[in-house]
Length: 301
Image 1: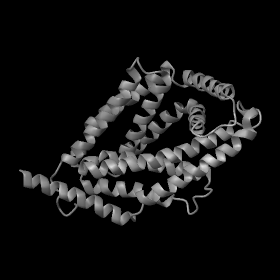
Image 2: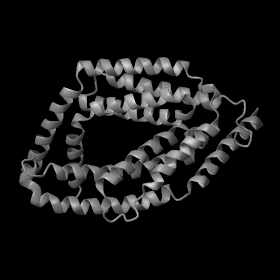
Image 3: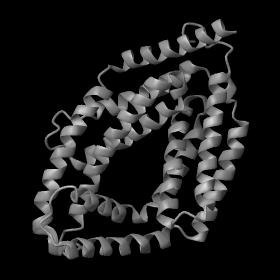
């Protein structure tokens, strides 16, 4: 236990259970909300599944094979919902490029946007079908039942701290040695780890509300910059031969390259701050915060 303080304290496990119920409820609302468009619903469901997978990663050691299986199933569901992801990424990249002066007419920009919107909407209709909605609903039913059966109140903070540190370490190890022109696939892997780290830190934000919020915001900013780089890479793919945006390739290519450099510069600065600590120091700080939380609770009684 962390300084012996976590022994006999079930509040942390109870907090994880509450977080799990909240994630499942968010996913159910996204499936049922008639006010959400299909792209919005897919986005919200995928976001909930990412948070759920981050929770399952935290619980991998105490829950064992079941957590691994459910995380793999959630990943397959996310992939099944990702048919429109590339088209949406391209739309996001076009919106990002509009922050700088474009060598296109308003008509050209709108034509590009309409082409990608049509591709996205067609993909959404295919991937977010009624059978897919039913598959998601069955998974959420199983997740709810599993959550009720898991002995989360018996999980101590040391176990979770180890998992937090493992995710932190994996992300830190993926930081590029050279931020000027890192491989797009490498950046994509880093972004996935940053997303997982951000969601896991959200789960324990109650330990230090102000610092936790600042940490989450910093991780989100890094995630956004890395995501913007990914979006630009996808946009570049859609300008290839016989692709929907091929007529604009010569004018888009230099804009994509310049915007990518700008995002990478900011990402390098954010990553340097977020992952400044070595993993052992990170774990020690998180452990100290938990011990302080328990000590304050005892003092307040």
